[in-house]
Image (cartoon, rainbow, N blue to C red; front, side):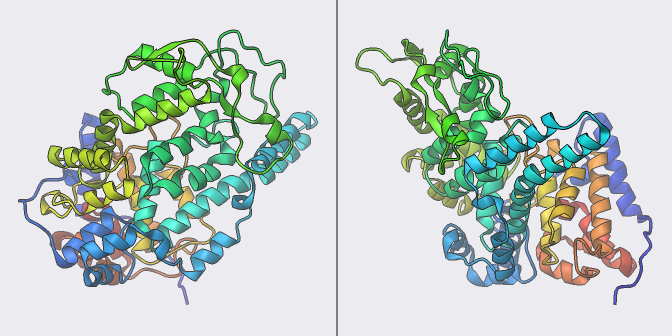
Length: 525
């Protein structure tokens, strides 16, 4: 039976030193020394050391027994299993939890109707405290489940799915093609966006992933593509059912991010004139409002020829829309083809993957090799990911613990280390909010960073220690009972060094797990 607990202060000198170093370095604008990665001599890892490393890079940390399973399976075989996620059955508790959700079964039109009805309730509410409160309650009842289901599904899959590489890649590619849950009716579509535009394509062709994100209503709204029209176009229908104002001219937001973030990169060799030309080529790509209002099933992307700029463009040195050239919706499709196959895109994607999986400053040879693999396979992401995971750099001890965990990885790897899958997932989402990384909450198009400089600060370390304390105390909404530090150490294996193990075991039993999860060793991967 669980005994009542009282919170005890964290007083170990080692932990105070870690926090103090974070504070001093944060004030100076540097990374604290306790969390600075120092390269080890170059040597290839093997056995449980390699398994631990792999589970912290190609997975969100080990669950109990994972270390032994990966070591016994073998590095390459485990990677190949992960590259075929459909062959790995979901455990019954996870499958049951996902099956109970309602909103993932709803069409785009049904989801947008939730948003419309919620906004309508607010607008029609009596101007009284009681009327506003009732309208807010109705709005939350309509819109809230779409976000809750999206967040819960992501968290539960990340914690319990054996398809760990898929989960790591979903997080990576969502941030690459980021949309913000707080913008207009993206709120009700963010789950569908991840489910339809991201997850099915993380091990497919980059061109398919690029096209799926480009045409999804969540992206069309988030980067204002629905507002972008040819000069002189006027929409006489007025505000649509989601309350958006009618378009009034060319909007370059999506075109700019499509080249700068999604494909070529900021140094990809394009100009502002190319951004404008691409925006003109994409005019007409929008949402089918008639289909949405009629509650028609299926995808809501449409090309509206009335909105399209039919005049000639010059883009990346090529003329578009002239006699014998591509026209209409084909202009945008052709642009995506060009961008997906561009050498600068291969380099940009290779760099980002190497940075996410190997080191904040990735080795040049690895980036070059991945770019060549990307180009040679026509952007086959399964082939590129396999080349990355089986590269010498991936198994090189010189890059062991070279990455600092994001709050997402820290929280989830903590829970995975004790085999937890909290239901409901709200407390886990709250922990991510508190640590500054709410799911789907990155407001800017570049998404959340995965580098140490983005996350190391005194405040961030303090928030992590608070979470570690709650988890170590066996907080009921997170775990069934108080975790045993010795068992967690066995689960994590060689990822935790001898010095940290000594600090942990020197603590009184009630504080051991806190010191473990709050250590620099655990916060690196």
